[in-house]
Length: 238
Image 1 (cartoon, rainbow, N blue to C red):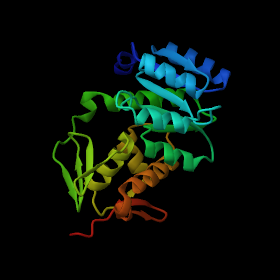
Image 2: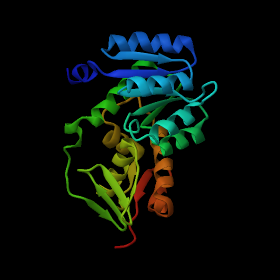
Image 3: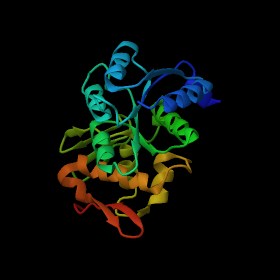
């Protein structure tokens, strides 16, 4: 029932140059209770974003003219628009573009060809993470060397400088920090950061971790890959 209430009245903009995908998502998202806006290219999408201020954007990366990464960059650099969550649609093999999109501030991604039910579930997950009760977690900051993770503010600082993380990246870093120096499998990280979502592949965690390491800059080494097992956050300051 929470998901249904969450969808009522929310506007989702789908930007995709493939008409069949727009029609497919329009039908299924409308059925879920969302108000759906449609755009076939980046420029049209930006116009609708500025005029309608949707609650979430489903953004294809491969668009004619202004591509998806450019749209993402413009939205996330606009003070009035930057808080609108973006779920990217990408073709398989575009991992570098995915990393760039996450680095720009996109909230999630899904690869084509995709299942509509999977995309809808991912959209609901993004909305759920934005709900106030989704943040009613331990409010005590976590200190890992120069990294400070503040669950109450959903903020991470490195040497007192804030770094912008997606909600998934934040939850991954927080989970690793809470299990400092312990190795967590990809399945454990998926369960802790994505909830009970069987449709999310383990590769998703790898991509988010690549983006997270990049954002941590010189401290990216602290997230260590344990080959064949998973990941750990290594704090050598202790």
